[in-house]
Amino acid sequence: MTHPAALTEGVVVAIGERRIVDAFSLAGVEALPAEDAAAARAAWDSLAPDVALVLLSASAADALGDAIDAIDAPLTAVIPS
Image 1 (tube, rainbow, N blue to C red):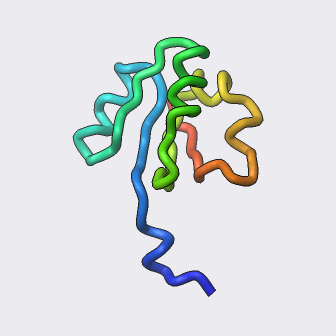
Image 2 (tube, rainbow, N blue to C red):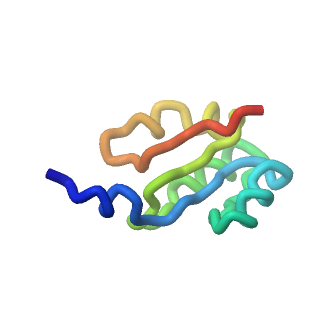
């Protein structure tokens, strides 16, 4: 059984357009601005192993496609626009 505390540990990252992700840094989220698909993929590829949750803008989620569904991918959520 997984200890409940283990589910709350880790870094939270936001990937997407700067105007969207910068506001999340006020809550302690690491913002990785990505203005186009290539930048979103580069940000995703640079994620550290301790990342537990990735918040994605809609365009970043589109750019990443099936990568966010990989079995070893961190938990992701798309930021509503």
